[in-house]
Image 1 (cartoon, helix red, strand yellow):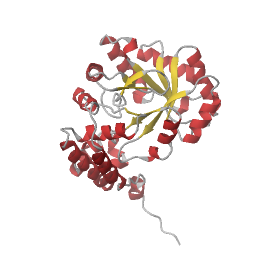
Image 2 (image 1 turned 90 degrees about the vertical axis):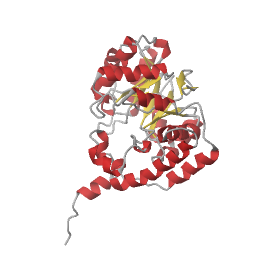
Image 3 (image 1 turned 90 degrees about the horizontal axis):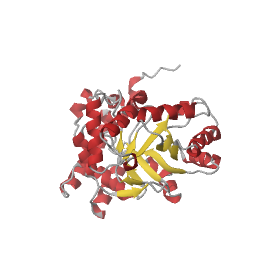
Image 4 (image 1 turned 45 degrees about the vertical axis):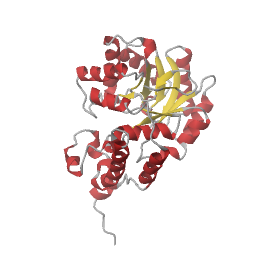
Length: 327
């Protein structure tokens, strides 16, 4: 396993982390024994960076992750744990309540990295009110470092301006070979300011693995059933990239998924992919994304293929609503 430093935190983290959204109803890993096997396989392979959130199963993910680490005998200083507060809780009253609950579920005295999961767009809490509430928890020792997930650059700047002594160390963004909007502003911003970028959905929720054909889409029962990426018209475009990934992988003895994650790692030293896994085998495959590099020509080939794909997120709405007649 390769390692890097998380922003300016000084924390040494694995080049590929483990996302744990799958420990929830959204993805269906609801058996603790299976979750434990996934977490401990990650530890065995040198993965020490774990991402969870309050919103993942309303605490189930945090509970499974913390319990697995304890029962696996993993020392606290061997892992870096990141959790996230949903936008609805981003106010001075709810921030400490939420973090205390997260720490209880995780079985930890502190969390290494605390992120705001998304902006409080429905409640309009002032940015400085929750930024300072989060910073206060750093001073009190309940949190070591701060970050933001799914925030635009303008709100990142506003949040940082509100902090008096601390600064953020990481941005978490949706980033993969067919969803590359982060490259426009967020990735350059992170590189300029010495921030790490946690790339969530680095495999486009599995679409880039190449394991699903068009006939398989109707069988999906988890969160992907209504994901625009898996709409047949979008998916036909995604399959072009998946086939290109397989082609490149054949030259290195790697899977399409391993090539997709490796492409992100090569794209920027700031990027730390955090793929999820529903089995220990998938953890092993994800870990195999590190320790090698494809050629520049292969990187460019994938870059060109992916730039020819345009995902239409409105496709479900457009096709499911009849147009009213005017006049």
